[in-house]
Image 1 (cartoon, helix red, strand yellow):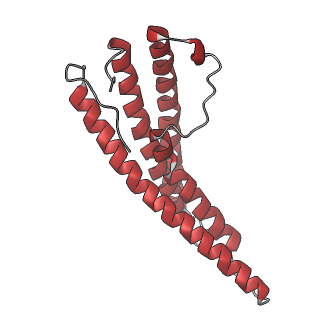
Image 2: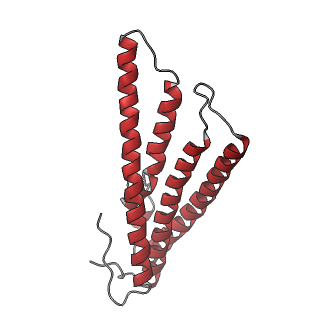
Image 3: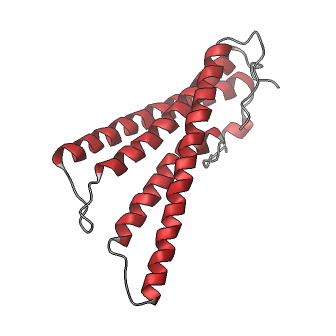
Length: 181
């Protein structure tokens, strides 16, 4: 992934570059883990299909598929944000230019960061509660909290990507040409 280049005189250049690089590195690592979860999901699904053809079933397949799907989705959130792969409705912002576009992006970044940071906190708190109570899954009787922590890790990656986006939006508000290539 290539990060936007910065002009030498742009404010906060070193800090934003460091946060961009940390975010890119962390979210690439999380995306690799997401790919492993997806691979595991596919292997378990193929195993289940093969076993059903032979008249057998894999116990707890729905729990395993659900956990691996949540891990694959959650761990890929930050990487998707880095590449702007989420759905964006631009019906209003398509008509904005200059400072008004920068303000719109800043507001959007701040709201997104705030929401995702709060969700990350509460998902992590839920994982701690699951750990404290020793909650087990219904079919396989496995502990649930590691999967919640995996999702929390993915949400933290998304939060880091949004911090970088918010800082970039602040710089663009001050210097609209800061990221010209």
